[in-house]
Amino acid sequence: MFCYQCEQTTRTDSGNGCAMAKGVCGKDQVTADLQDLLIYGIKGIAQYARRARGFGISDREADGFILYAMFTTLTNVNFNPARFIAMIQEAARLRDRIKARYEEAARDRGTAPEVLNGPATWQPVDDMDGLLAQTASAAVTAGREQVGDDIVGLRAMILYGLKGVAAYAHHAHVLGYESDELYTRFEEILDFLAGDPTDAEALVDQALAVGQLNLKALELLDAANTDSFGHPEPASVRMTPVKGKAILISGHDLKDMAALLEQTKGMGINVYTHGELLPAHGYPKLRAYPHLVGNYGGAWQDQTREFAEFPGAILMTSNCLVEPHPRYRQRIFTAGPVGWPGVRHIANGDFSPVIQAALAFPGFQEDGPEQTVTVGFARNAVLGVADKVVDAVKTGAIRHFFLIGGCDGAAPGRNYYTDLADRVPEDSVVLTLGCGKYRFNRHEFGAIGGIPRLLDIGQCNDAYSAIQIASALAQAFNCGVNDLPLSLMVSWFEQKAVAVLLTLLSLGIRGIRLGPSLPAFLTPALLEQLSARFDLKPITTAEADIEAALHRA
Ligand code: FS2
Ligand code: SF4
Image 1 (tube, rainbow, N blue to C red):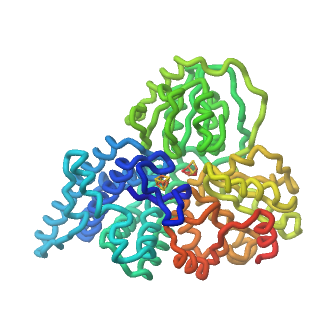
Image 2 (image 1 turned 120 degrees about the vertical axis):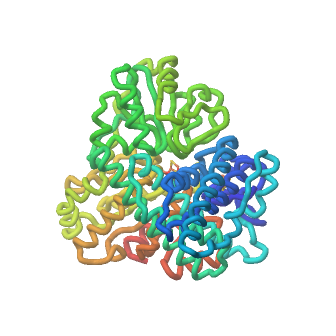
Image 3 (image 1 turned 180 degrees about the vertical axis):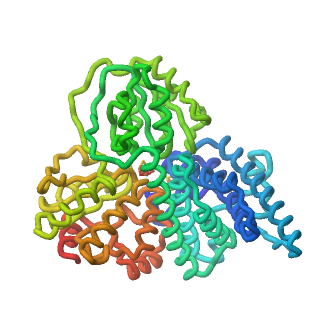
């Protein structure tokens, strides 16, 4: 096992990465190795899918499978070895189907099909021991002795960025939004990785191409969400319980949430959002369900305590899942890409088992005190008052915008982001995005001329909204995004954040502050390169970084 895909990876003097029997996230060696093999199998599909497209052949089932299967390998998504074994076999089946179609098309046109190697020829064996014996060439560090840490790090950055793209594109896919252009580029980049590239410049170019591809995925997801559920609007969300039976829904998936709300209609069960589903309250078509009563709990890393205390059923629709405690193992369910051995999985969108569990548990015995937060400042809502915002900047009422975007985690260094939000001067606005906000979104921030000082744009999945807001402001001021009084303070944790960071870099955005620690897969040489080209900087202290942002240091 070797994995260094997330921020919380093991860091030691002798090297960074989770390499023992279990990763910090709880992923065991078998699951980690099976995930590597699955990625290897997916590269094999892409090798043939890319070539088949040259003959006008595409395979939508394989395209969708690639997104779903890659999503299962993100941090805190799926820990169930049995699911990985099944997906590895499915990857080989899909690859062989596309291979046959590609070779037939080539022969029909009188050309010899290309003879491919690596993942294209891999034959996964049926039994677990045999499979695990095949992991050497699939490991993320394969070839490190020959090519060195910089090349392995660049390959890893591309792969992890693609995992993030896969997650975003999968959320769009389940709502019926797909793009051939996205699939084509995605598979081209996977095919590039399958060739074990060693040219550093080409690798950097492909990493930025992943950033551009991610922008397409984010745009597609934004269209999927807003077409399906309306544009988010500012909405006040209750943060305390309401008496009655209860279901808690966590993760990011709006389709699962809509289906759960529909299936619990009129049953006397209250539905609460958790974690990254908090911004879902801003969508008019979701908010319209009266039994969507509020939000419960905070960010993902607090779930063991919060889920244990929640007196109903719990549904995880995507990351971040941590090992379910026995106190709630019988009433937590997974859906979509998520999995944990022994935890019941809803594969068909029928949430009856979740509803039965909710009815069997006592629910909340009384109402909690009223406490609310406001969500829903996505692009449409912010740009709807763009004139007011632009005027406030012109008159000096708003001096600066701090976008605190990204994830939360258990590391103590993450207090930086709370300090930052609390210390931002009174004449500046804090924009939030992702689950990093839960540490401070109940604090009092007030308003500037009627504009709230804390504007929540949404999930990490809503990064497109943030980019659109920044672009529109730049247009209004007739300048570039880098010239706006805007500082991006990115708190990264997992691979979606890698994808978003690559998007921002590919858009030429400079001076991003990244923390709480820098990616372990980036070597000092790579960091130096990114810093020279994009002025990418590590966080320091909240006071110093605010000072530097205000004075553009
Ligand atoms: Fe937070 Fe976890 Fe949103 Fe990330 S709930 S760290 O995977 O996706 O952000
Ligand atoms: Fe370690 Fe993160 Fe990989 Fe889990 S996902 S094994 S914590 S690097």
